[in-house]
Length: 175
Image (cartoon, rainbow, N blue to C red; front, side, top):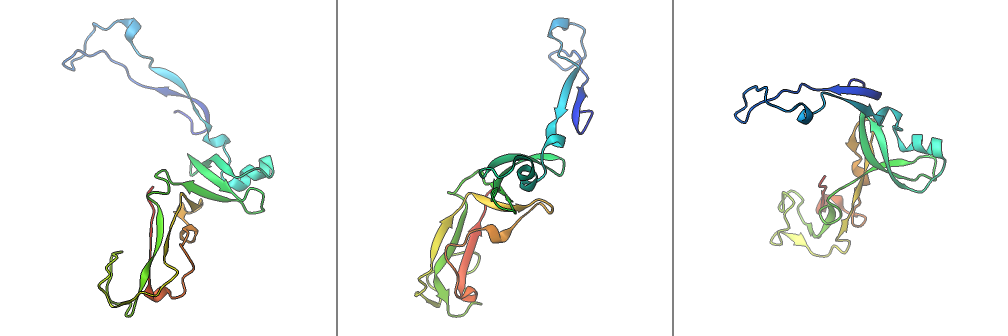
């Protein structure tokens, strides 16, 4: 589009070619595609944060909205729209089946030993008395719009950890 904001024009070169890719003059003028068309870049009219939406519309229910982020249109879930600090979340398209947070039920007696690389080996020197083990699934993660980073603390943990050094904690996000 010829403009980054508002209405503009897109242009392209159109030429007639034969089946073997050679330039030709046998094309019907009626079948020739347009060389110009009007285009619109609506991102300049979009809010850039959930707070911007709230300041325009007032307190509204939490829901999905389109925001202009770094010149691109991004679909964001706005949470806390009835509070003074609404927050932006990305909805993970793969859903809860693929996005998990897990605490494995065994605690290592020596944290420098196996298991490693997110494995669930049961043959390690482990205590099997950890009652806070579990799995949580999730479908959204919080986003820092200025840095375009996922806020890691927004990833839910299955249960509070009492001994992080000897508990295996694993999170997986699929975008």
